[in-house]
Image (cartoon, rainbow, N blue to C red; front, top):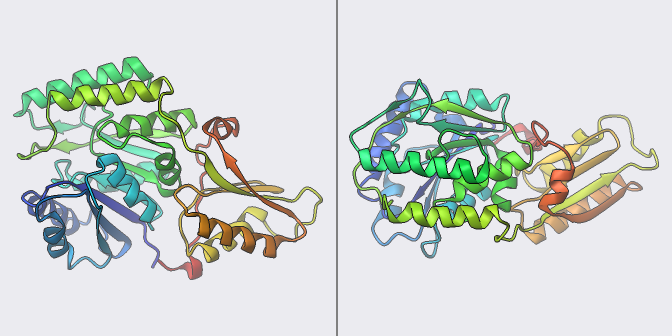
Length: 343
């Protein structure tokens, strides 16, 4: 059975809060909000100095699809989520906080929104959201931060920092390849990149309940986050190019069938179903390879050349500006099928 959803849980020194988060997650499973047979959970231990990894392995042991990955040092929440995105096998990818402060029973709403959008994000500021008002300082700082972000980026979103976001996985791979902020402000850069690429973003209402023990400092961290946001906004963070392979049927050599579908089939076999974006038409198809290593990229290039000779098949690198020049990518980032139709 093909995996539908990958849930990424970044965790730094969360050993004491993981059990409460898993209790909320299991409640969502019991209510039918999560299908464990079609869902994988990736917990990314971000260089914790406590028993986060060991606790996670114990708590996740009964899940049919899960991994606990430990980073060698504390790289930041954004870096932890990027690691999870690079490993995701589901058609959709979501990330949520280890304490599950956002009720995971909202997962079906994320998936419903992703049928027509590239990103679906929780928003505590929507009228239908329910927010625990007992932690006033954090709530006030969150609203102030969002106003400053909106003024600086023009995103027009009500809640950029809600730790409950989801993507079509090919879109997630592309965005996290482009994003360079590794700490808490990475959410803003992800959303800004998505807007620039013309991706569709939908906000959904959530239920948020404060859980004691957060590692976020309500005064110091927002200042650091704002500095990162403005470094990104004014081009002070370099955006890495995205490797790509182009299959071009300029001489009309294509056989019967849809060229894009045939390319996806080769990509699925070569990359073992890795959900990379494929953007294509009847005579030109581009395979984007964000978060794919150089060896796998070279093997795919050889496989595509062998399959589509005498068509022109070549590698190239795409800057952010080149991606923008492709036109709005909304709805166009399609992953290849899993090889053999299985997860």
